[in-house]
Length: 370
Image (cartoon, rainbow, N blue to C red; front, side, top):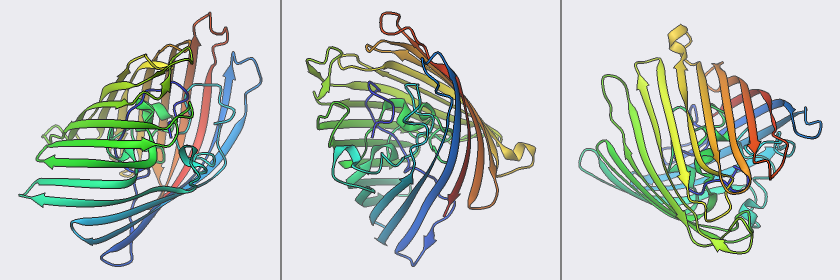
């Protein structure tokens, strides 16, 4: 599911959506966890040609089941349900104001007949030495669980809401389809290689997707860091800007996060893609800061600040800008509530259209994890 609207970059990300506060372990082999979020957003926009000042809400729910017969083998299932589509159907912008899986996302997934089953895979891990492992996974995968992760801008349920600050926003990454991935970890280094077959893209075509990530994860006296180089490509199954010829996609970029002490964290994402296929954006640059609540005596709270510049591609978009700030209050071990403010602007080339939507989106989100 590529949540950036038509023409987004094609690639892949890291971490299953929703970081769980704790999991319920039925026994040593079986555990179940999940996340449920309820959010409302109100947009106040201008230069859209219509009255789009509305409020909408949605309630997505995901549950994860893990079966681990031993340290080497794991079977995993993730189910997703939702009520409502938030601002998706009335949002005048080229990016989604909340990157969650909505009602339309969990039904007929990727143009298939499959509903609600988001992921189902088997993983075998071979461990050797003190700090070395190789894992092989195959099944129905979410590519964002393996590529383009980020410590401070990765989870639409507990961090930023706008998709440009979530891993799916950096590349328009495919999720919830057949594939396989190999993960190699040795010391501070990691390598992930992934391949997927996606049932249907926005042009209605089945396509193959490939991605690799090289990661360096140093732990220093300054703080932990994560530095990732990413490349991704597809086969020739995407329409060009004229809609008459099929082209492939090639994307590359990096995702960085670095802690500075116990309070401040920095994140940066850059992504570029070729323009043979029709793409809204040829480059996305984003970054921001995280402030941990222990700096003001609230250990579970945090503040996130983010800004993104999206450079127009070949479909008439000149550029887009997104700014977002949120405060997340950790109520208890399971529940957190977030107040969120976004400012978004889309600018088009004059030959394409004269309207350039811009405006504010105010949101409130409550997330319970189990």
